[in-house]
Length: 234
Image (cartoon, rainbow, N blue to C red):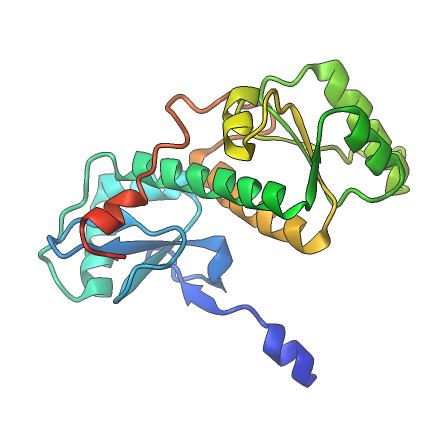
């Protein structure tokens, strides 16, 4: 392995439920608060020991129902004195949504994305778009036209390459980016595309969303991460 490859290798962690070892950016960290409550720590910032799970919401639900999660957490944190909130899965979903939306907001302020319809279409045709996103309530015709422009720019005509419909409507995206009526988002920076793609992938995988999913049933931006601070974890 070349030295530069060694430096860029992503840190890996083991899922406490499946035993699979994967890059930690693909996993979800859980933290134990001082009062023994298990909380999501999707940004992996809480101090102390953490427990990592894969972004498989269905497997997570099954682990809760069977009691497997409690046993795995007890081993990971080396204590049986822990409380698993009844709505932990929902809290994780909301935290992942908040993280993804905040990521988009940061990229907007950093100038790595384009919104609207004409500008993203022009950038897509020019081969400048690294990642294309559509709001859940984007019109099918608008999505189709942008998808086609993207395929042209990426020399992928005839393929099924298309933008990702994310589980947030234009109102939620507008609030995240500090702009109004955000329907289409084109990421024009490669590194930014990887950051955004990773955050959105974890959110959608855990929540079971797909490309036709509508807006999240709850306010996706509810800041469950703030509970970490309230409970002394940040």
